[in-house]
Length: 356
Ligand code: SF4
Ligand code: SF4
Image (cartoon, rainbow, N blue to C red; front, side):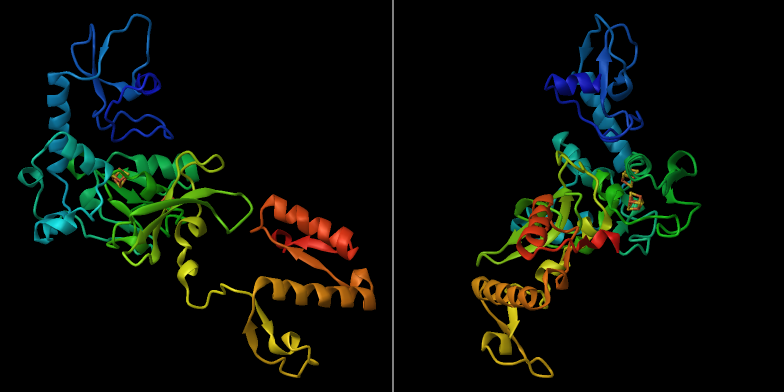
């Protein structure tokens, strides 16, 4: 039913449902009125049949959804949220709302009336270096459990205990890494409440720009969004990486390198311009220590490289040169390196780092 509504452009609020995951019908937030049924039914798990009459909005359904949100809030503790009243009003807009909080606002629930003021679980309770776990914000929607099992195939999360004590747990109540977590971040990407969050960017300024890009780590070609904060002087900083649900190769999935390995972009040691040894630049013979590196423009670096490669090939033969390409290149770049090796240099000695 929910899928049919989406296809027809009708918005039915959801929390435990995600279109990538098996329907769970746990939160009951997607309830609809069905003619002939005495009770509202969860649309995510409701098969469509001929002649059904459905109401996705009604005063009764709205009351039902509000009651669900109030119940969830009665066990939801967010320390940062409680501190929010101490933040100047003009800076509150910098705080990002989670999917859950957007629905709370949408249904105009008086948050402070319902949320507890004491945590039930330790905040930041898992030593995983990339995922921040705060079970006080968990609404037990099980999206993380399904994402880890169905997308990543690691089965790290499961449910423990019963009733109001029900909570997610990694493995047999151990740490995420001990439960075979690969730190892919999928569970955090699917979590609608921030109970599982990206640790590296937690508490960082809110990004004000997104740039879709292709990961540089391997040849799969996963896409994601760089969430960037640009200040008034035009300085840009990557705050975090988020999944691009419509990425053709990977959808919401990413590995630990793509999702969390972005600090190299701003690293002070990163080379941003080509460098050559000074003796090459000045056309001098090579010294024992080979001298210092000098920053040059691309034309100069490519010219020196071409002259050196030509002279080695002419003097020692084509097979004196070997080419090593990279899985970080695109298919097209690797194709060009193949052409360069065989047709420009004249050697078949070309290989690829993925075989090492
Ligand atoms: S980070 Fe990935 S592997 Fe680890 S628990 Fe989350 S989804 Fe599973
Ligand atoms: S941690 Fe997040 S995704 Fe997992 S059950 Fe809790 S609210 Fe849902």
